[in-house]
Length: 75
Image: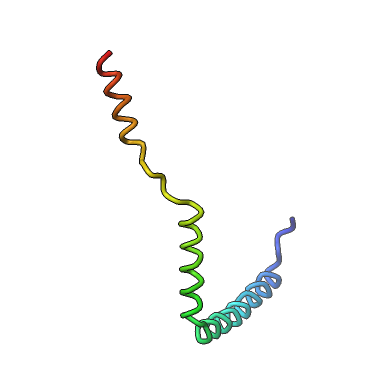
C-alpha cells in the first residue's frame, strides 16, 4: 500500500471532520426523539428472556465439593 500524500491526508481528515459533525447531529436527534419508556420495556424484556433461558443452577456445587474433600480427608 502506497503512503498517502499530504493532500490526500488533508482530504481524508476533512472528510472525517465532516462525518463527525453529521454523526453528532444524528446522535443528538436520536437522543431527542428516543422513546425512553419503550427502550426501558425492551431492555426489561431482553433481561427477563435471558433469565428464563439461563436459569441459575439450584446449587453452586460447593456442598458436593465439601463432600468430596471430606472423603479424601478420611482416607
